[in-house]
Image: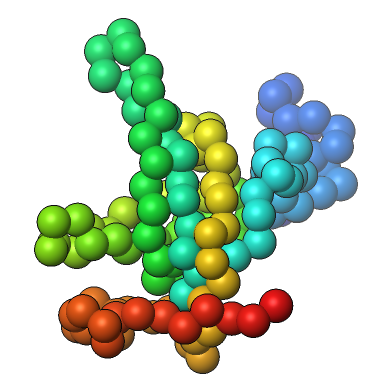
Amino acid sequence: MPASIFKTSPYLCASFKENTMQDLIKEIQEEHLNTTVPDFKGGDTVTVHYRIREGNKERVQPFQGVVLQVKGSGNTKTFTVRKISDGIGVERVFPLFSPNIEKIIVDKRGAVRRARIFYLRGLQGKKSRIKEKRV
C-alpha cells in the first residue's frame, strides 16, 4: 500500500500504518471472542440453548442433536446440528460465537472417523446411531 494514502486520509490511525488489514481484523475479532465455548467436533451430541425473540418476548429454546460439521475459523466459525423431529430430519447451522447462544452442553462424545459426517443424512433407525467414545 503506498504511503501517500496515509498522509491524505485523516481517518487512518498510526497503528494501522504498522499493521496490515488482516492483522487489524484479527485483533478486533480476538477482543470479541467468547472463550467459554466447550470443545466439540463432528459426531458429538450437543444441546444448544438458543435465545429466540418473538415480538417483545424472549425465550430460550434447547436444540439437541448430532454435530455434522464444524466449519470456519476465528470469529466466523459455525457448526451444523442435526436432529430427528417427528420422523423428519432437521438441520440447523449456528454461528459459534453468536450472542443469541446462551450455552452449549456436550452430552456425548461420538466415535466417528470423519470430521464431516454427512453420510448420516441417508441413514434411518438404528443405522443412524453413533457409538459413544470412551473417555
